[in-house]
Amino acid sequence: MKLTYTEENYLKAIYYLSEGKSEGVSTNSIAERLQTKASSVTDMLRKLSDKKLVNYEKYQGVALTREGKKIALSTIRKHRLWEVFLVEKLQFGWDEVHEVAEQLEHIQSTKLIDSLDEFLDYPEFDPHGDPIPDKNGKFAKREESFELNNAVEGDKLLITGVNDTSSSFLVFLQQQGLTLGVGLRICEIFSFDRSMVIELKDKRKITLSNLVTRNILVKHK
Image (cartoon, rainbow, N blue to C red; front, side, top):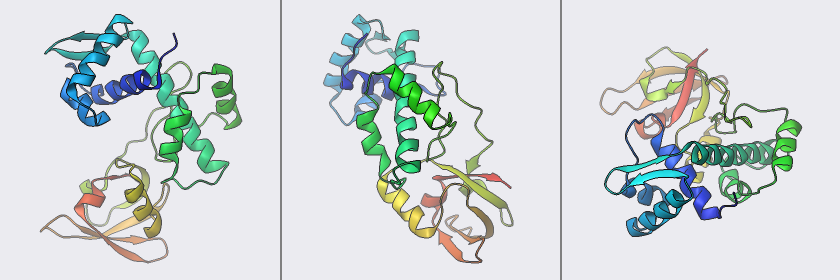
């Protein structure tokens, strides 16, 4: 089934919004994520429903059908594989790859994507720490990670991913040397706003706001 870029983006958005939820995804939440009008979302959902890619009832929310989920996972797989390729092979910064991958994820050649997966030696995680589904839609088991703001003083941790993939946030982390795999120790946590002082391997200390620590994923060493 050949879909437009917009249709694939809708399926991907619905997948993300439905993660961990049992109820249907609302029209307004889709509109907010895709930065479009609710009326435009309603029109698209009707089209996707006609193609049997979503189950949609007005005021009841929307859910992906099996085929809709398959297409959403395929799009996510392509996006994350291209991110790995751009960072590992073309030396793009991890803050630069998202917008380029947004364009590349709509390539339809299964042979190309399977070859790309093989060329990259079947990576399980993208440059931001997000798991990459395989061609059957199966994810590798994600490491037991948690948000840095839930750590306690004295914890020794490794950075495993981020919640915020905006360019500005990733540039900030890069400037501070806070990239995937970097080790750190929690020196002090301020009770007033949960900001914290961390120490890196080179003994450099950095103070991070709660907004920053909520968006960094870590695991215990």
